[in-house]
Length: 415
Image (cartoon, rainbow, N blue to C red):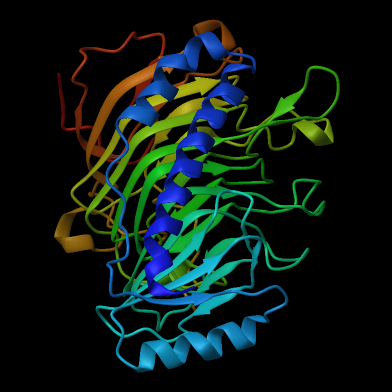
């Protein structure tokens, strides 16, 4: 695409993005529970932070039909090696898989934009490898797995602490039928990265977590929503475990992907909407045991803030903050038997006296009491040093504090 056409393309893309936001809102409001979420969705449209856009001097590469992942990486590396600070990949229908840090090599300070016309543009998977640096920005497209056996459309291969991933108006979905018919195990798997989402970020139903994050450097999500599907008369299911989870794993306790250094910075969910999450086991005839919509199993950074969350039809709970302190046995790989990093001592491993989360802020929570499964408490908070709830004390029927045995109690709760 010629440089003079880039501005017009981006302007048209923005109009399509606005139309897609309106379509998302209309679709959400036609589904069950719409009376609860209309205000939340409107706020998602009104309060999205400003996106990152390429400058007028950015190099552009248009993806023709049939281009292979190898050829795309080869052409991108030429532009990046020429010293362009910003490189834009433009696609209308299909963009082949990108493996940043393995096939595609950015330098510090470089930005790679991947821009579609709208959510009909499909990126066939994004992998971030430990040597990935710079910024990767996905804009106005849908991301699907690379192939039917791929567990996640967007994923880190081990700790990726030198790269900043950004999304704007992105959908995560799968056309495949594996993983119990959901087509993917997880929507995103991020390990050690910085992550920023502006506009909307929607995740199709998946077997486990919509977003599975570990040991993150910083997380700021403007709006996160999952879709649901019907599995039998009246049986709605979304993400089998959680819409969003963060774990702060010690590297000696991880199996497969390496989690690495203790998490840092802020985890901020500005607006989120979970639909029928936590159903794991239900489709196999068992009681659902998937977990809460938002689950935080530790964060050694500044704070965790859940600013505005709405829950529709949870199969388990709504928010669970706890301390992933026990559960790893001593072995050759894990000589200390630790499970996760803790807050005190600049992120020392579990010592029996430390909290898993330094500070938790809970904003507006939209919970329909009659929708909570019998015997479940929607809010579980444990292993946190301080808790701040700006709206005032929570209904005692909705929350349990210090529910987890064997971890330090909450030090202070403020309003």
